[in-house]
Amino acid sequence: MTDRPRRPPTAQEFVLGELRRGIVSGELRPGEQIRQDALAERLGTSRVPLREALKILEGEGQVAYHPHRGYFVAELSSADLVEVYRIRELLEDEAIATALPLLTDADLASLEAALLAIESAAASGDIPAMTRANREFHFLLIERAGMPRLSRLIRQLWDATDAYRSVYFAEPANRDQVEREHRAILDAARRRDIPGTVALLHSHRDQAVQRVSLVLDH
Image (cartoon, rainbow, N blue to C red; front, side):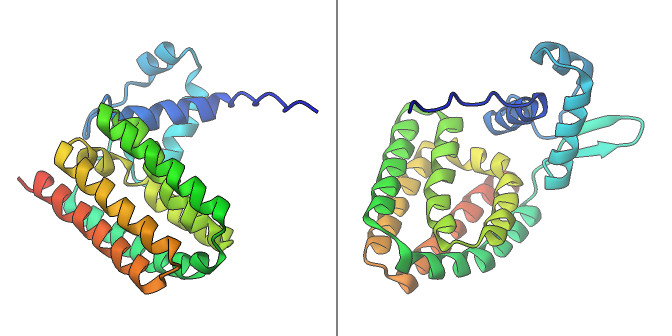
């Protein structure tokens, strides 16, 4: 039996993906107004799926709605970043502690493949591709815990901070740092070292918060 062709996304999914890509790439800058008519025309869609996508992003905190003015890309702030990463830490610790004993050789091979994709994107400076591969690496661990509600909560937090991640990855030295940290995390995961992996992930998040905060507070 041949594989079924991939179902094309709905108009809302397409628009949401394009908005996310625009925010991550910096095409849509923090504080910039989202001009719905022009954007809908460029994407070849009506304003209905665009409004639906914007409401989703508003719920994630990636855009803000101002009455009588419209939607704007959310401004970045250190306080917001610190809060989200603190909540992530609490939730991800539980996911990792549950997931590591369940890792299979196939899981570790997938983690290695994701890591290679991160390194390839980092080398070429492709920030959106690095962002996608980075997410895949982390969620291969998180979702192995087999707790879908927990995974959804963590995913919402990640969605809310993609713009911060693109700021972090924009600096070559940070990309090098991320590669080293991911290698250490994977080595600890291979040993099923729960305390070691959790500690490395704490450091990994803290490093990102500190460096992005320096940019935002400059």
